[in-house]
Length: 156
Image 1 (cartoon, helix red, strand yellow):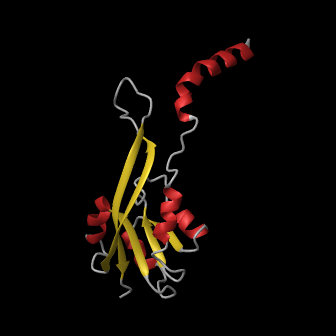
Image 2 (cartoon, rainbow, N blue to C red):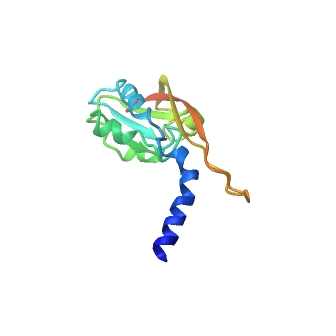
Image 3 (spheres, rainbow, N blue to C red):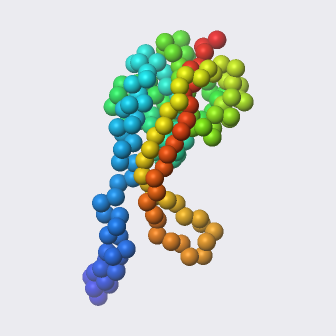
């Protein structure tokens, strides 16, 4: 009986799942991360805002560090900058999406950041739904375009 119920549930879910089998979120994000990492040397420190990729779950710091040999870290608290030993790095950079630029400019590190260049990422991901709706629709694929800024942080 249990096997029959399991097989029925599995068969009922196949039509709903078919359009997602071949889909991979952020498929081209790794290649774009490689391109973005070419702006920095191995002697630089790269602080990456949690939303630099447009999604807090798709962090750029891991691949940039482990695959491309950069000193890249996830960064979200401007007060932590004073706790870091910055002397062993040639330059320090901050990567942040446009909507978070105001946050950093108005923080304790605001007078230390200098615009370096713009960046842009494009990816396809599943669109999240509004949790307040009674009827939850199936996720839809959406093209996301993230624009942001790279700042150089002066040490003094």
